[in-house]
Image 1 (tube, helix red, strand yellow):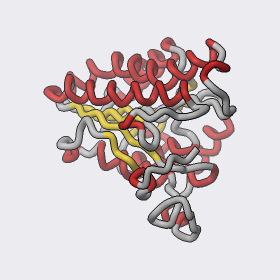
Image 2: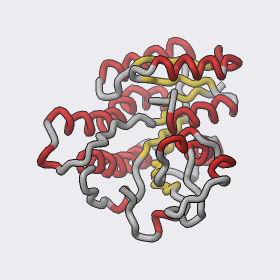
Image 3: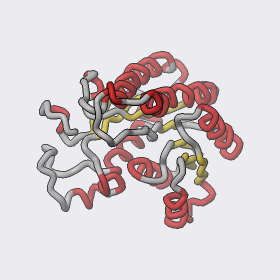
Length: 253
């Protein structure tokens, strides 16, 4: 049985990714920071998968927590086939770079960029030994073109750096059967993060060319496809999942 490790996989976009992997027969390790109620709700809803599901409390800005998460996963499941870097701290307050504190800056960089490095360092020897691995990172709409983002400078700097890191990993690890790709979600907010495509099609979104909002299911289906064994031809790609919003040169804030 293949195993997926999903950071922040108990709610939001990560929850739909966890659900998708469970339904595809994977065992899954899910990290969460502090929302135990979301974990309890998930476990109750998916009690059928209890033996295939493991939750680990971890803060992705802390290297020791990430190391613990990998160690516990190996102890229980013995392998890690897919690393889904879903967690990504975000500061909702709109402010210029000059107004960021050092602590806020490092939270964005550590949580969105350094965390991927630390997890990669722990996971890559496992994947090399298996001769198989799938690494997924998250960006934002337009990240591949390195745009400036007013009032989101620290977050965008980390994610744009992650674009290059993802591509570098894909080149360096290709010989070991490991792929690395980035997903760039469109404007998926609020309840739509945990919504299904069917739900989205009953609503109208004037900001998206296809006429509906993106959902957590859209992201989950894309990631699951990239993690299939026969998807090895796709690596080093920055994939926009925006319903066409990324091609009309309008950045949603």
